[in-house]
Amino acid sequence: MRHPFSVISLALVLAACGSGPETSFSDINPEIAVAPPDGLVFLPVIKDEMGFADLYVNNVGDAPLDLTWTLQDDEGVFGFEEEPPTQIGRDESELVRVTFTPKNFLDYSGSITIEHNDPDVEAIDLQLLGTGVDSPKPDICVDDLVVDFGVVPQGDTEILFFEIGNCGSAPLELGTLDLNGSGAFAIESNPTLSTIAPDNELPVILTYSPYSDAGDNGTLIIPSDDPDEPEVVLTLLGNGGGDLEYPEAVVDCPGIGNPPGFVALDGSESFDPSELYPLEYDWTLIAVPPFSNEARLTDPSGERTDLYMDAAGDYVAQLVVYNSAGIPSAPAMCPVFAMPADAIHVELTWDTPSADLDLHLIENDGELFEVPSDCTWCNRTPDWGSPSGNDDPRLDLDDLGGFGPENINVFEPEDGRYHVKVHYYDDNGDFAVQASVKVWLNGAVEWTGSKVMTRNQVWDVGQINWPESTFAPDPAPLRDAPTRTCFTP
Image (cartoon, rainbow, N blue to C red; front, side, top):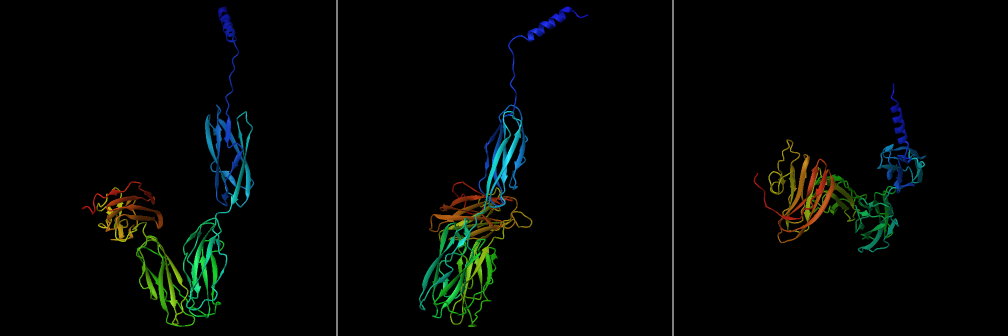
């Protein structure tokens, strides 16, 4: 039997719980905020390439924010880089990267709708706007396609010039200019392999020196990387043009070679339509890389000659042939790109005629002049331990006084670090010099730099990282060399 006091006590407790002021609790909800709040406007994007714009979604509430995304895009040009989040925790934010890939040169629009569980905010509609544009392109401009020198007496020289312009929006790269027809025409300032910036011009000076009063004609072909007009042809006229057939220089041009070394140039297929034989040959080297100081042609008056390439880069040789009447051909150009065959190719030059600077390539933790770690003048072909020997470096050129170049090559480097250094060995009266280093990795220029040095200083140029195929310049200041010759192994 239940005691009556228990019932009374329970009633009193319940009464006490119902007494006093009324208690209320705030609802716990998510709270959404987006930036930018109205939508995304993309910067102009090149047709068929991808642009990006960032949308930030924040939850500043006290409960998880649930999201549902709807992308409306009739043209299929907008998208998400990654799937957008479906939930964001309290006091958290998410970056949503939206993509835009235009299919044409048009204005595009779309929208994103974000549905969510924030009870105080309607579904969010964001507008997407983007414009597709054409990619930057060069555009060659030459105003007059006929260059007429008028009447010029035999023995005189007339000078005219014209301008090659770039009317496009990207740099214009010129190829090797090709002059055909009469050898009385010549290019005084040859812009072969030059670069013309957008909205700029490059003057070209032509000369005309007639060998007779019969008249001369020719053409000048200007190749470039203009995608719509890869060649512009100028007609050259002098003394009325004439109808003479001229000797023609023909070069069997290899186009590519490996420095340091020779390539063969063959002009034996040159001919004269008038059959005024024998022909005389005149080879000239008209362009070399900036680091080249010893490039040469072995036989400038032969049917064939060899071009010696001491540095990597672009060379241009020219051949003019003369028939037995002394009438010259237009010059035939032979461009040769000297590309290192080795994975690592380092070149050193300097700007004075007598100073002796030395290039060093040191593996991993080796020291300057340490054998076998340091490849340099007193350790030209060190053994770095590979069974094949393909990772062993070679000092192929050692210049003992004046200008350089010196170069060190590694055909197949082992994984590791390779330190490039320059030592100013002896000034021979030249005092301060400016040393320049160019680093080629896998056949391409990776880095170039210069430093002013004085006798016995060391320039810690930087570090080649392999197999990453990267170069890191060393910011350390110049220092004095601790020694001047190789350590005993």
